[in-house]
Each structure stands twice: as C-alpha cells, then as structure tokens.
Image: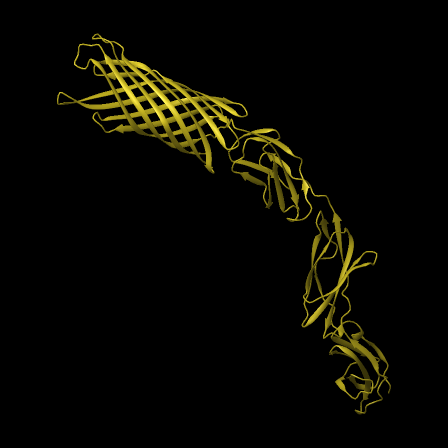
Length: 492
C-alpha cells in the first residue's frame, strides 16, 4: 500500500503542524515519521494515528515526512514518497494601531507607536509601505514595540515578522492600514490685555490667551523698552511682575514641542504709563522723619506768660500710613505721626489724618487733589517759679492738598506734595485758630517686587493765635525743616 500525501499546513507559518493524507479502506492505522534529512536517518517525530490526519508540534526548520498504512493484521505497508515541510515561527500578532486608524499631521513630525504580541527570544522586522507599494521603512527591532516618525501625509500599511536564532524567519503578518492627514495648526487667540490697552507701570500684569490642540507649548513674546520671551508648556497665561513705562507689543506662538515650528498670533499693542490710574492702588508704609524745628511765642497780655521767647530743637518722628483705592479716581488715606522731645521743656506730638483723594493722570504724570480731616494733639511740660506746668493743645481742621507724581526714568519717580490746614484748637485761655503749610519733594525707587523706598525733603510752617483774646494778642509761630524723610512701603 502506497499512501498519497494530500496536504500539510506546516508550509504556512506555524509551530503546530497539521498532517493529512488519503485514507485506505482496509487500513487499521497509519504511521508517520518526520526527519531532518531525506534519508530519514534522524527521525525527530513518529506516531501511530487511527485517522488519516494528525497534529504535531515541531521545531522550526526544514524537515521531511512520510506515512505508511498498517492493515488489520498489523502488517505495515510501503512508505510514501517523502514530503518536504518548512516549519516557520508564528507571524507576530499585531496589536496597535488598529486597522484604518487615522493620525493628524501639523507642523512637526507625527509619531506613531506600533505594538505587537511579543514572542520568546525573538527579534522583529517592521515593514511600512505606502499604498502604492513603495517601502518607506523596513528595519529590525529588538522589542515588540516601535515609534515611527514621519512628516509625510498619506495612506500606509504596516506588517511585522519575527526572527528566531538568526535563521528562522516567520512570514509577515497580515497588513494593517493607517492614514496620516495634513492639517494646519491654529494661531493662539489673544484675550487680555486687549489691543491698545493702557496698563499701569511697575504693576503685575496678567497676559492671557487661548491655544488650540495639538499645541503643547506657548511662546510668549513682548518687545519694547524691556523685551523678553518665554516658552511655556500647557499654559494659557503669563504674569509679569513689573513693566517699566513705555509702548510695547506682545504676541504668542503655538507649537507641538518646544523646538518644533511655531504659528504666531498678530502683534498687539499695550501702553504702560506711570499714571497708575488703577482701582488696585493699595499700599501701606512706614516713614521716619528727622526735623530741625523752632518756635516763637509772642504776647502783649499783662498775664504772667506775656512777653516773647524762642525755642529750637531736633526731633525724630514716626509715621504709619496707608491708602485704600476705592475706584480708579478716588481713594481713602490714613496716616498717624507721633514723636517727643526730652529736654528742659518735654514735648510730645501726635497727628492723625483721614483724607479723601481724587486723582487724574496722563502717560508720565499723575495729580491728586486731597480733602480730609486732620486731628492734632500737642502736650508740653515746663517749670515756672518752681511749679510744674503743662499745656495741652488739641485741634482738628480741614485739610487741603495737591500731590503730584512724575516719572523721571524707568527706575525713579518724582513726588511733590503741598498741603494746607486751618486748625481750630482748644487752649486753657481760649480757642486757637491758625494756618499750617507743608511742602515736600522726594524721589522713590522700587527695590524688591512690591517694596518701594523713598526719600523726601520737607518744610513746614505753623501759625497759631487766640481767636478771642480780651487780654491782648498772642501767637505761636513754628517752622520745621525736614532734611531727612525715609520711607518703605508695600504696594499691592
């Protein structure tokens, strides 16, 4: 009996090999042998089968097989002619990307991650072709994944095969198709500040914009007296702590990565002015005063304290002050000053002012009109004919003033203040009235973020007299020169 071999699926890519042959009517069983050479001197697989087919696990490589029938008397027949089989590794099972998956290409190369089922001790060959059959990538890789980058849109297919022991190659897997589409990236949309907006100098300014996928980076640029640029990842805003006065332009670019091509918005203008007409001009500060002052007393009354005398001395004063900005053009200010002199006639002084300020400004100039209430308290001690005496003068008055602020350059500001008050005070010998003038000039400089330092020189003149004095005319005249007024303030 000669058996005719019908087919063997080992010619396909498989470790598990299916054998089949023509059945014999009187055959009790069949015997199959698989050997590494055609003479069958090295048989690596043999088995009896009751059916005209079986499945066997075989190693990779080229082999030969033959089959013979065994009749009912257990007598074997003649071997069939040898058949050639080539056992190949399984083709890798593709996992991702899925078939017909689409990718969008913008400015930079699109990255496509390929992944397939790993095999033991295997290397792989990844093949990528265009839809016209042109190979664009065919390389060996050692892991079951690979990321391919391309800047060309089109239709592609991809396949993978495995390599074992450097000699056993699987067939390529069935191809999967992918599509790469070309799209244009949109430029960012600038939101704040709006074009030609006016913003205050030396203040924190927040720039905001909207960017669109697939942008991961925003590139903020500002040019003018202080030009700078920043690259920001996944951000739609940027804050500048302080901008010197001047006219600036700003724009924002988008890109898929830090160094990939960028798409920019149009330039927008902003005008940064020293006027600082803002509804957020809040500040608090502390000022130290050093003054050289003198006072003249004159009276023609017949009382014991008639006559004339003069007094001169130096004094340190402390001042705490603050401003709460109600609106862009109005604010509420509060200050408190105190000091004392230890001498032949000890003297203490306190001054509290609550004022409302209305202001307006231009690009480099701001002016404020001040209307307020001033509360003053003077306490004086002295000895007369061996007796201790004291004099308390308290008063309040309306306060009028003008404050001017100008920009000298990008660093310094000039301050000029003029104030007038008409105090009405109470004294043991009657009601006092008079005039009070204050003028000062100074410069300030930003020293750290929101901290400003300032230096002033000031002159003050006070004249007090009794409103109703039946005993004669009495007056106090005082002059103070402030060669040193130092202040630190925190501006929000």
